[in-house]
Image 1: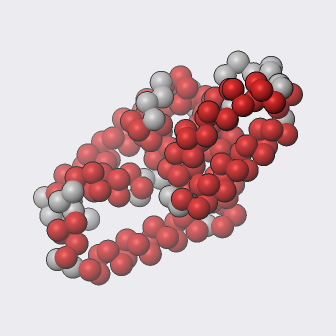
Image 2: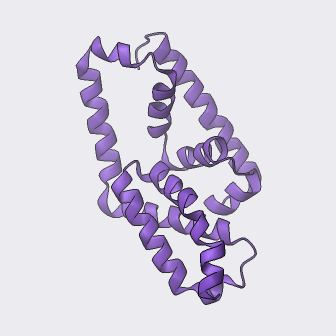
Image 3: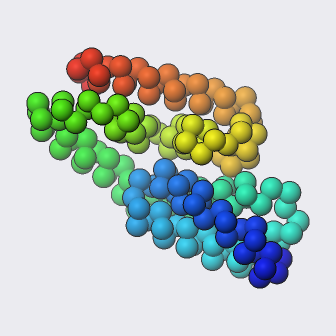
Length: 169
């Protein structure tokens, strides 16, 4: 793959790669670092990219794997979510005003999902990927992706309804 082909085919994916990294990591600076790491690795193996049928899926899978490696090494993501959740539950009635914004509630619930359902729901509902593309990115078959997406949506729906009805989490 030449410099021009790389710029034409791979560089335009940067926004999708960034959003995927942000969805997995939940941290803008870490997501930006993962985008840089992804492009560095893609550039290094640019000659091998010619043999791939779906370069976009390969790039998305690469960034996802890099993010998972980062999370496994640092374990920061879970600690940040737990810390944020414990602070929010201590805030009391002031938090209920914030929960009126449905979009914020949905994003909060999605952010608390386990990694794979969070990634699948993000790729499908936010990025608009087809099931086959998501299956290629996460490394599962299409049927498994459909089940994961269905369960993730059900979990989000139940938790949002519970929160909006001022139920106990």
